[in-house]
Image (cartoon, rainbow, N blue to C red; front, side, top):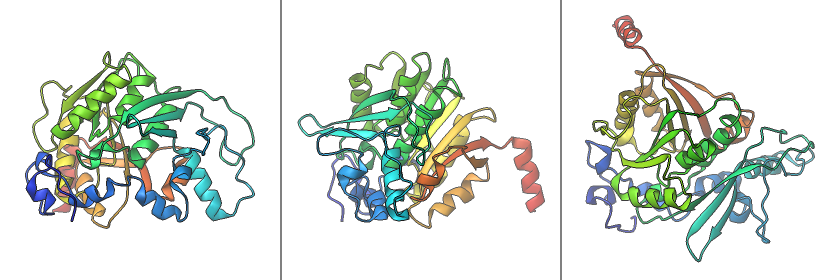
Amino acid sequence: MATENPLLPVPALLGTAAIGTSSAIYPAEELLNAVNPLRHLMDSLGSTSSSELHGTRSDQTATTIGDEESTENLPNSRKSKSELITLLPDQHFSESDGILSLAFSLTSGPSFNSSAKSTKSQVSVKLVVDSAPGCGGIAWPAGQILSSYLTQTYRTVTPLAGKSIVELGSGTGLVGLIAGKLDSSCKVFITDQAPLLDIMTKNVRLNSLEGNIEVAELNWGEPIPTNLPSKPDIILAADCVYFEPAFPLLVQTLADLSDTSTHILFCYKKRRKADKRFFSLLKKKFSWEEVDDPNRRIYNREAITLLKLQKIPERDRAQGKKRQV
C-alpha cells in the first residue's frame, strides 16, 4: 500500500478513488512511482543506470543532442539506450536545495546517426521537485519529451509570439515553463490540482517567469475557471493518461477549453491496457495524428507518443452519431 500522504483524499489512498471531478482523484498506484519517477523508462532500458538515464556523467558534465558520439557501430540494444538518453535533457539534481536543473537543446540537427556537429544553444529551467503532493511533483518522461519537442520545433518553425497557452496537469510546470522561456510575449497558464499550486508557483519564481506565466487551479471535469482563457491558442498536456476514472474528466476539459482552431499537443506514455479506453472516449470529440518529429522513432520504442489533437466540429460529430445509428 502507498505511504499515507495527508494531502491526498482517503479514497485515493485506499485505491478506491471517488468519482466526480479530478480534485477527488489521486491514484495510489502512481504514488508508488514517485520514489523513482523514471522507473518505467529504466525498466524498458534494462541495465541502464540512473545517471546514464539522466544524461549526466560522474564529473557532472552532460551529453546533449548535439554532442553525442555517433551510435552507428553500437549493437541495436545499446544504440536504443544511447539515443534515448541523449534525447532527454541534460539534468543535474542538487541534493542541498532539492532543485533539478534541465537543459534542452535548441538545435534541430544533426540526426543521431550523423557525425556532423551542431550548435550548443540551450534553454534551461530549474525545478523544485517534491513527491509529497503525489505523482505530479515529479518531472516525468513524457513531459521532458514534449519540452524537447517544443525547443526543437516552436523556436524556429511555429512562433509562440502573442499566443495564449494552457498546460493541463502541469505538475512541476516543466512544459509550460519551457514555453514561457521560448517566447516572453506569449501568455502561459500552468494548471493542476490544489496540492501542486505551491510547487508550480515556486518554479515560476525560480525561473523569473512571473511576467508571462500564471499558476491556476484546474480540476478536470469542473467548469473552466474565469481566470483562464476560454479558448486558448495552444493546449499542452503530458503524462495525463494514468488513471482510468479521470479519463472522461480529462476529455471533457479538453473539449471545454478548445475549439476547432486550437492547437493541442498531447504526449503520453502507454503503461496499461486501460489506456485504450481513454482514446475510445477521446475519438468521440477529437481526431489525432502523430507529430512529424525526427526523434519520434526513438521515444516510440519506449511507448511514448506525441500527438496533435484536432477537435471535431459539432456538425461532423452529429453526422457521425447518425451513421452509427
